[in-house]
Amino acid sequence: MDVFGIIAVLLTLAAVFSYINYRFLKLPTTIGLMVIALVMSLGLIIGSEFGFDLESKAERIIASIDFNKTLMHGMLSFLLFAGALHVDLESLAKQKWVIGTFATIGVICSTFLIGGIMFYVFRWMGLPLSFLYCLLFGALISPTDPIAVVGLLKQANAPKSLEIKIAGESLFNDGIGVVVFIILFELVTGAHVFEWSHVGVLLAQEAIGGIVLGLFLGWITYQMLRSVENYQVEVLLTLALVTGGYALATALHTSGPLAIVAAGLLIGNHGRRFAMSDSTRQHLDMFWELVDEILNAVLFVLIGLEILILSLEKSYLLAGLIAIPVVLMARFISVGTPISIFRMRRDFSRHAVKIMTWGGLRGGISVALALSLPASPERDLLLTVTYVVVVFSIIVQGLTLKPLLKKAVGSSAPEESPARH
Image (cartoon, rainbow, N blue to C red; front, side):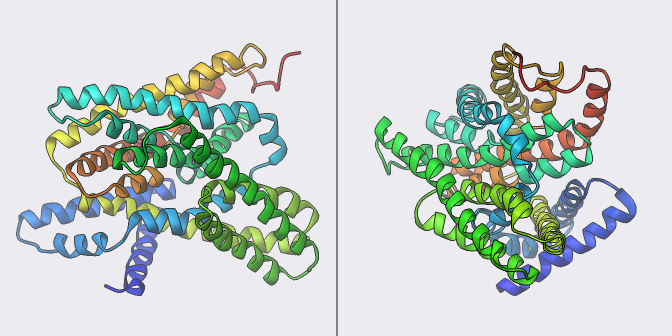
């Protein structure tokens, strides 16, 4: 099937599933779409056992879609920009040390915790995997997904300080997670011998370079926005910033996700405040909200359909189920330890660790990174385990996050105060 045919199928499924969810299931849109896609996929798999040859046709279509390129080099830039556009930079700056610690040290800590524990779990199950491959799994599953979590936080009416921590962390830690993944991937494939100097250079080039490039491109776009008063041109400029900026970041071997987040924060704050009229602001918001909704719908339908190309071996599925509490425990430690230290200087609500642990949803980025691994038995195992964790995260954690927030906020002290003096 050609590219247009694939886009047509995905958009049609997203529209029909959205209608079914809105009329009957009434779940949060992204969760509802993924649930329906999962049920349909499982129905095709079961149907094939009874002689209905629809699974193989659907599998061919899904296999022809490069999920990694579609998300990491297609959808992600638009989704990150749309998410960053509405994050308050002043509130983010107040939490910069907390968010920065979660997005860097937290991701690295989680990577090693998950990798170390799963190394022994796989060996115990008779699925021996090298320690580096286990660390690779830790790196791809540690970042929380901004695409999955930001919308849910708004619907759940989370306390503003907690929302900015979780949303801010999720916008930055996927970029850091990708950098850690790249470093480990090079070690696994033997592209580079481990050297701290190489790790330092790669981190600086990818992470710092991405942020600097994003701020530079955002500043240029901001100056152009200030010099025109036409919402069509201004919306087009932001679209060029996202597409051109991500492509340039990739060409320069810097982090595209971090570049787009930095640019989105600058345009969403200074650009909206000083370079746009009320009419432009309204049209810009409507445009990016629509882009965000459409791409989110397609993405979560795709995640639900990816089950058609998995190796559904019982041992792989069991390993995935065991990985769920391992990932949650690593998240609890990597979030709880920094919060315990920061509590010496600032006040946190009693349930901050609990909410941040349960609210750290995994999503499409983890699946995309797992799919980027070279074809091998290790890839099949890690892809299935990753998928099980992601499905649990989006459906179970996503559906229970709002009740948890209501219960926790209702029984706790007021939100965190900025700092103790």
